Image (cartoon, rainbow, N blue to C red; front, side):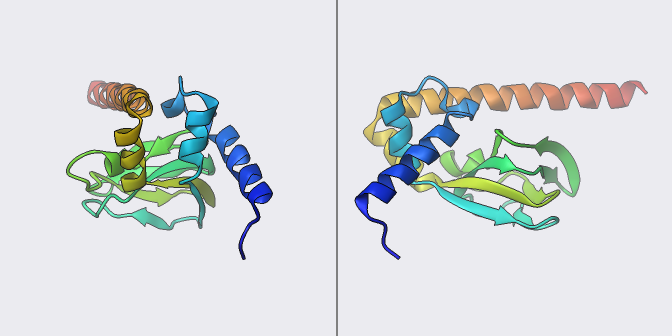
Length: 157
């Protein structure tokens, strides 16, 4: 089914408004969010679905709308991601493979953005690329610090 222009614009506006809830898009203008919104799909995952495998090709960035996703390395949970959080940023970094696996802990819906499409946007609009990658870097650092804190707590007990 083809959408007419009015329906298409309405869907892009709705998606843009969803993207505003994610910290990786902090600082972007509405029109910049719309550029990204044009590339977004919505996917659903059932409880216990494997969303992607460790060391598999990283093709999409995932933005959780509902549900929770566990991030596992060698079968151990290293992080849990919930609504308004992202995972799968390996899709926009080298070497383009996932460093962990992701599993739906409950029925989950997420927005997905193809990493190649996002990187194309970054090349065309350096402002979008700079802000998004800066925000992803902050997120990676925060998650790493939290993981280290958990690790230190485990070794103290």
